[in-house]
Amino acid sequence: MRTGFIWDERFAWFHTGLDRRPTPLYQPVPALDTRETKERIRELLVATGVADKLVSVPPVMATEEDLLRFHTPEHVAKVRSISERGGGDTGEGAWIGPNSYAIVKLSAGAVATGLSAVLDGNVDNIYVLSRPAGHHATSNLARGFCVLGNIPIAILRAQAEKKLRRVAVFDWDVHHGNGTQDAFYSNRDVLTISIHQAGNYPPGSGPLEDNGEGDGLGLNINVPLPPGSGHGAYLETMDRVVLPALHAFQPELIVVASGLDANVMDPLARMMCYSETYREMTRMLKRAARELCGGRLALCHEGGYSAVYVPWCALAIMEELAEIKSGFKDPSMDRFAAWPYQELQPHQADVIGKAAELVARVRI
Ligand code: ZN
Image: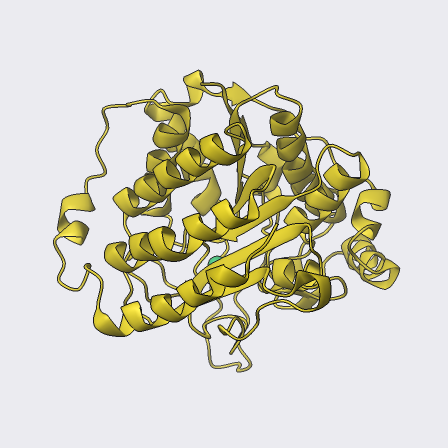
């Protein structure tokens, strides 16, 4: 198994500044999107020896032409200009530091590089640990730590280069993948599925009813799970919604918007997943990719704000992706797995059942 891995030191240099609250009576703290949540993934992979067994793929920066397949010229000009002026908010909660324009283009380019590496057959599958994230950015608005739509930019480039037509994007970040949904809402060639905590972020975004339109009708599936959903609810969603939808659509590539913030330690959400949840979901996706598209699977990093626990979730994913046993066990897993309410609850099953009804609308 040749599993690719993309990381670049410059992603750690990306600067999100301080957490900003509209009051002077609040001691400033660093924004929750920190370099540690990414660097510590890389460090755990190195320390456990897993990194040695991965194929390191150098990211290539996205061009303005790449950006403009998805974003408006005004959006690109705004990000560049704020970067040149020394930094600021590029939208709604998407702060960048000085000279960040190069890094946001590198993050989008890393995802595009990752998709190419899989589509060209240089690796069997890949994890792109890029920063900043992208799944909240729309064509003309940066928000929620996301400046550019990394995944739409990468898919549109792969399609322009005729490497790809039909692709499925599965977003397991705990927040709704609104940017990816918007990008392909009326597109018959891209299936988008998002599992998220109902209404968490963007506020109210990602209801069951948003099911695509026009040529894309039926090809956007949202699963807005109740807060408190854990291992049982996530695996049930995989079994009843995600895997059947992928089989109905038959993509040429499966892309995962891999936010690791549905874990039980995350400060920005209230879900209960743990490392084994991610391991099992990765195993299911690998099997689906093998059955549907020659194993082609690209996981692209999004959110995840617990510096303590995100790395263990990532380690489980990488072990499964690369079929490696590092021998290092997540020290918290048994405790989290034993918490009551990890199993599927009736009110969670109600939502999953409604989402499962949407699978019948997915078509080739
Ligand atoms: Zn998130």
